[in-house]
Image (cartoon, rainbow, N blue to C red; front, side, top):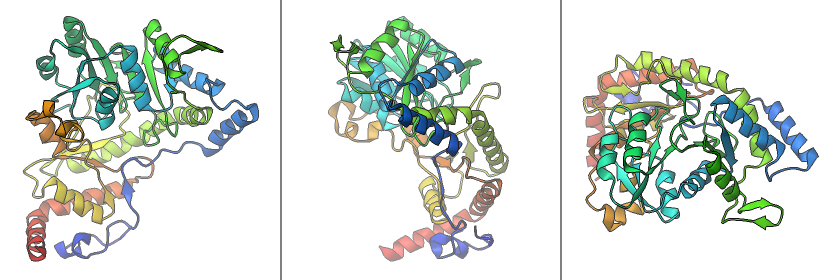
Length: 407
C-alpha cells in the first residue's frame, strides 16, 4: 500500500500519480474457509467413491441449511440459476411473471429461458427491492406469479407481496441469492413465499465453489423439485417426469459445509467492515450508504452507496478514478435488466419507464469488503473519498479538459 496520501489533484493515479494501493482491492473476492477441513472432506468423498448423485455430504449440507433457517425442505443444486429455474418450473410460473428490473440478469434469463415473460417492475428507492404498488400495476390477465429479490440482504416487503399474490391468486417466489442469514420481522429468509432460492457461488459469503438451493415448507413442491433435479428419476430405471441435471456434487458440498461452519465468524468480519465504512462515510456529503434495519439479522456482505448529485463527481468518473487507485468498486445491476439485451431490443419493452431503477442503477457503487479488506485499507478508502469530496470540482474540470484535448 502506498504510504503517500493524496495532497494534490496531480497525485491521483488517473493523472499519472502512483496508485493508492499496490494490489487491487476487489468486490466479491472468495471467502476461503479452513482449507484443511475442506480437503479432508474432499478426500473422504474420493475414498468413498461417491462424488455426486445425492451423496452423504450433499444430504448433510441440505440438513444443515434446513435446520438453520428452519424450513422443512432444502434441495441443493449445482448453482443458483438452476435452482431458480427448477423453482419456476415446479411452481408453473408460465406466461407473465412480475420481477424487478434492478436485479442480476439471471433472474430475468431464468424466466425467458423457460419460455415465460418477465414483466419488469420498478423498485423502492430506499430498500432497492420490488415496490409492491408498482408490482400490482404490472399484473395482467396472463400473470402467473411474482419473483421478489432480496437485494444486498435487505428483504422485500414480504407481507405486502404475500397479500398481493394471494389477492390475485398467483405464485410468489423469492430470489434470496444475496440474503442467506438475513431476516424480516425476526424470521430468516427461506420461510417466505412458496419457496426461496439461494446462491452459494464462490463470491458469496457462504459458498460451495458453485452451488445453490431451493428451500420450501411445501413438501409436494419439494418432491417435484427433487425429481426435476435428477432427470425425473424416482428410482433406478424409473423416470416419472421431465427433468434436468441440477445436482450438487460432493466436492461442492464439502466446501459448502466448511463455509457454513465458518459463517458466523465471516458475518462478524463483514459487519465490522460495514460499520467502519458507515462511520467514515457519514460525514461525506453526497455518498449515501445503504443501511440495514437495526433489529434484523444481516450478513453484511455488501457495502453499497448511492453517489448522489450533490457529490462533486459523477458516479462513473468516481468509479474510474478509484479503479486507477486499485480500488475496484462495482456498478451492480447497471443499467437494469430492461435496458440489457435481449430485452432492450424486444418490442414489448419499448418505452418502458422505470425511473427508480434508472436512478439507483445510475448511482450505485459497491465497495470492497470481505476477509481480505483490512481496517487500514478501509480507512485509506475513506481518506481518498474525503479528498475527492473536497477537490472533486477541480478533478472534474481536469478530466473534462483532458477529454477535450484528446477529442
